[in-house]
Structure formats: C-alpha cells, structure tokens
Length: 190
Ligand code: ADP
Ligand code: ZN
View (cartoon, rainbow, N blue to C red):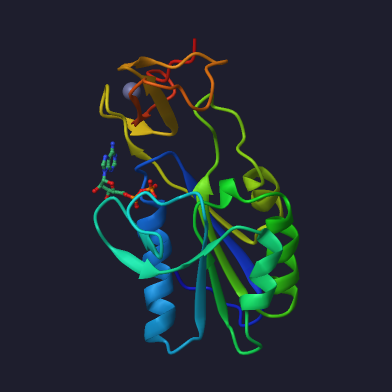
C-alpha cells in the first residue's frame, strides 16, 4: 500500500482470527526491508502459537520479532535510527501501547500494528479500539466463515466443539478449546 507521506504515522490491520492480519503485517514489513528501512517487530510474550521469536502466519510466512512482557520495555529496544515498528497481536498489550504508538509516530516512525478488533464475544478487544481511533490508516480484513463461506468478521470460540458461553472462563481445565472464523450471522455467543 502506497503511503504518500514521509513523516510518522500509524497503520492498523484488524479482523478476526485467520483473516490474514499476520500475513499482511509480514508483507508490509518485508517491503520496508526491501526499501532498506530499519525495522523492528514486537509481539506480546503470551503469544507463542508457533514460535517464541517470530511472527508466524497461519500460512507459514514469518518474520523475526521480539516477545514483550512489559509494554514500556519497547522503549529500551528501539534505536534512534528505527524507521518502522511492527506490532503483532496488539490486542494483548495493555493500554500503554497506544501512547507508545502515538509517541513513536510523533517522532517520525511508521508504526504498523495488527490484531483482533473483537474478542470471541464480539466486543472491542483491549487497546485495539483506541488505536483504531488515533491511526491514520485502518484496514479491516475478513476471513472466510467456516459455516457458510461468506466473509467472516468474528472469531468463534468453541469449547469441546460447542459455542462458548459469554461467561465461560478464559481457561477451562480439561476442555478442548478451539477457534474458527465466522460471519455475523453464524457467530454464536450464548
Ligand atoms: P491472522 O493473523 O489474521 O490470524 P494469518 O495471517 O495467521 O491470520 O493466516 C491467514 C491464513 O490462514 C490464510 O491465508 C489462509 O491460508 C489460512 N486460513 C485458515 N482458515 C481460514 C479461514 N477460515 N479464512 C481465511 N483464511 C484461513
Ligand atoms: Zn457465516
């Protein structure tokens, strides 16, 4: 995507699980690398889906990333000459990530964040809504609904194959938890 500006700004890529957020983030970052830009990529420490050190998409593409435990530690890791900062799974950071993104953009950095806009209940997820509000560029992308094949905008949480209830605990001991992409019509929260 061509950005006709050469000062700092924030781009956000949101959508449900499997919509290709990581793929898109990786694509943009690799292009920045081709342009010989100085990039650095962060992800929350909790997301170790495939790799502790990389951002990895469901289709297998990857880019090196630094897992972050304490949001403010991002500042210690950014050199003066960094031009592009990538952030994956931004919904799992605390609210401070928004202030950091704004601050970096004000200093001339291109910040590209990707993450879930909604949780499994279909409600705004963590710091994402505020980040969407302050971003210059927002892309909402869709997955394919695993029930009807239409564009999917929501993440369906399943526990032992059945739709999770609104109040189901985050971790259910002994239960098999899974997620699939669904459209508004097929998304179920009991
Ligand atoms: P996200 O970061 O949004 O979870 P990824 O970039 O990791 O998504 O993965 C996107 C890839 O997932 C797609 O290119 C496709 O190969 C695969 N995929 C698996 N299930 C689906 C689905 N229901 N809809 C779209 N893509 C899917
Ligand atoms: Zn559907």
